[in-house]
Length: 139
Image 1 (cartoon, rainbow, N blue to C red):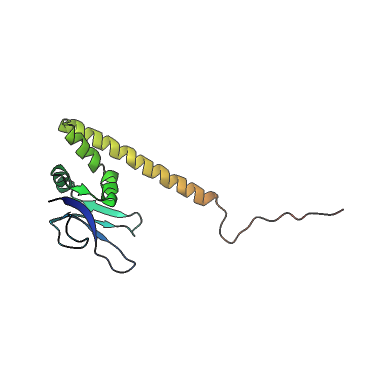
Image 2 (cartoon, one colour; image 1 turned 120 degrees about the vertical axis):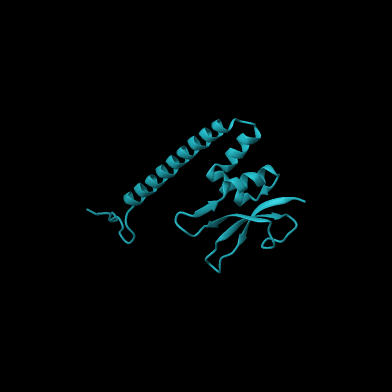
């Protein structure tokens, strides 16, 4: 039996939200699952993502394979870094230190990106306002 960690759609039309579930790979996409380990709301600003890290790490250690989207979400939270360090038999205190340091740097990147976006919005000309066109003068 192959176990996958996937997203199952729960929301309605044009308002998606998803469960992050562990399921047998032979089940259909929105079929029966073994355990729900989180939720994902992509339409919120910023996107809301909640996951139970202990359950995710347990299923990953048992050989569950995350889908591409779930892999990306797990990576954003540092869960895959934690799992990789566990596989390499790193001591738990060093794992906690590395994950904390990685999360701080990730938060700094997000803050810097938001500041850059705000600066670009501020320097851009407002919609509807155009720069005056130069008219050629004849003498």
